[in-house]
Length: 238
Ligand SMILES: Nc1ncnc2c1ncn2[C@@H]1O[C@H](COP(=O)(O)OP(=O)(O)OP(=O)(O)O)[C@@H](O)[C@H]1O
Ligand SMILES: [Mg+2]
Image (cartoon, rainbow, N blue to C red; front, side, top):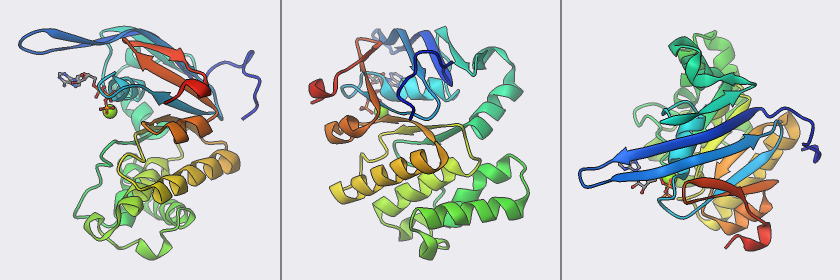
């Protein structure tokens, strides 16, 4: 990433986000005036205690959930005020999402799972397949194209989820605890792949992580606490 961000418009910005969940007994306020910016070409980390609202925040940034107040601007456009067609296109074309539990379809192969977002976007099947094979190859899965999720290791499953999230060449990749279920070696491998994609195609990432080691290795880290997002120095990440 170019390290001077001062005069560059953010790729994505969130301003004053609020979100609560109503349970029977009381409302849980998860986000309260949360704001952040994501710049093109950076690998941004988000840390915070379990239950602090990281997944909630990421889902709102990805247009999967709506905030009660506040705005999400992608290249300056409010994603929630453009109509449902735009929101669908935003989710499908501009954002890649790696879910906390990967969410691969069990009855389909690695290749088919990777191709889905491209087919949903009505892209030409052949070019989607070529892109999916290229990504799976890049992620070291050339020999696992026809394996179903049940026939893959945890690290391989996660790499398929990463390939799937990249198949439509999104400008921004949002990853929710992508290494949460992996051992140290697989986590490091994931991080190497992140770096490689960042260096080779300038892929922008927002990565939610519990791992202090991973967080410290990222370009910039924000902490979510008490419903708000604040920068955190790397020496303070525990
Ligand atoms: N659908 C829901 N209804 C009610 N409460 C919810 C709902 N979804 C999340 N919550 C609550 O909102 C809070 C934030 O949840 P969220 O999943 O965003 O946390 P998180 O920071 O991602 O946690 P973790 O690190 O454990 O994944 C939690 O206390 C959770 O119990
Ligand atoms: Mg979470």
